[in-house]
Image (cartoon, rainbow over all chains, first blue to last red; front, side, top):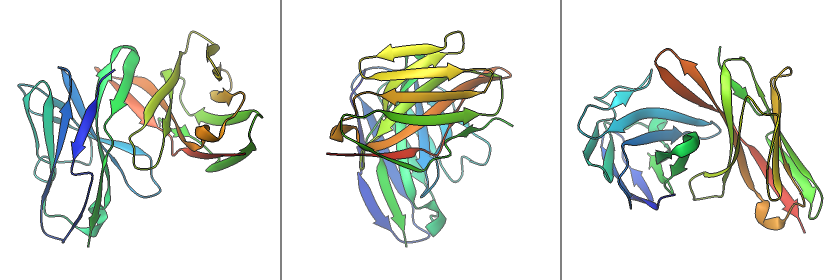
Length: 113
Length: 114
């Protein structure tokens, strides 16, 4: 398994601003994932962050809204841009280990006013 | 349409009894199933998984049963403990062209009462 940390753990932001969420893993991993869990909803994959290439976004998510960086094999950032109240959510990063098992960070709770 | 459904949003059981959490899926293309547990303010943690070639997998107090004909799986926790109180997510993989997609259920909140 891996130890995954996220910063910040929570934030309250004003609409129209942007927030960058950091994800740090204690071991090198090829693929990192960013998920969102909106209130009352399940986990939804935003994008897959691959080191050395552009992130791959899922349907309904675009790079302009959720730019992702992956500068090395242990770190990634997700930016939530031009935020609106609909972006209020828990944002989770995860890594994939053998057996198709995702290991998740603790999450970032975002409230947009 | 690929969906994973957890139709019970909540479940309450007595400590020491069995907890049974259910999950249904809509498509026979799903081939690998996982259960995760989530405590408040934490990310989900992997519990147990099962491949579609099996019908049962056991790990300590946790057993997952897969009924492919019914497109149904269940997680049994025996005996249930107060520390098991959490939200349980069912998730399943299917092949979508060149990619494997992981679809999540909405979760079931389990409360184990002392």
